[in-house]
Length: 457
Image (tube, rainbow, N blue to C red; front, side, top):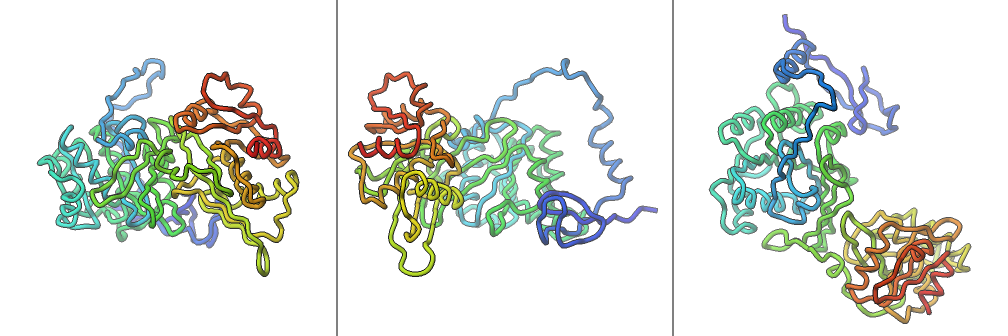
């Protein structure tokens, strides 16, 4: 007699299992994240493992394993190839997420059309849109559509696997994983059980057939990837597509990549003809070339290139109540720390002033390299003074007011020269390591006060 499926309760944040439901996960501390999950009987799971391994896998000595190099497949989009580490690796599984309407399907459609033209058959599985809807988008962003691009409006994972056996695509795209379901799982599409089961089948197909798979996923209201966190550990690459609704700039960032770095970003502009690549991101983010009060240029090093952008600050006297502190593009906690340092070390009395800081262009940076530029922009707005030259400020501000070194300072200086800046203000240690050679003035500052004097000189 076949055994019944066992029911466990699993946290969608950390994947920890419980025998009964409870309100809070004791491992990660999240509330209301524990949901019911049905597990296949042990006999069926064991039989499936034997079939998957085929009785051929054996323990081998690590030193005897060769280092076979797989040729990467180009997506036809250089910015996407950059984020992936040089292209798509055969047999890899890539998860791409983003808010609704941000352009995920547009980017995927462009990639599918170019891979179909240059490499081989591509199967695009759409669980949210009909074939006609996908065709309208493809006509807009692709122009001519390759005969090797197949669309399959389907949500049953077993039917999708059968279609893959028939077409034998060189690339499989599933849009989106929350709409897929398996007949072997007794739950609705989008549930924890279905997402895990469908993802597992896609992973086995990718690894056994050496076919790369792209999975599109939804995000929660807080912007995090929807579904169990265990899926992020199962896939090879996790990409996030982000941008502001009122701006056309889109940033593709890698949060996990087993075949490349997670520091790279790709830049696109959303247009009526689809996604247009932005190879010169710094030039597109900086529109104002004049020296205005409350405006300072900063830079961060993303992967293999420095990215320059403008940081603006506005300091105004608060009318009533508590003073407001608003940050767009940088961490709110980081802004509070910089304000405390300016009050303690630079003598600014900001208690009765509202402070607004914005990274112009829609960039969101988590790097501490922008601390100095934020501090200088706030000082400039508070004192109504501006620098006499076009300068770039890069440095991490410590709680003591000292400036800490930043990585890749030499390449940031070289990019500043290319963009026509006259001076760069860096932490003292970075300035000492700089060998010179570029036609630009480099100021080394030990603390925030030194940086302010160098910026105003």
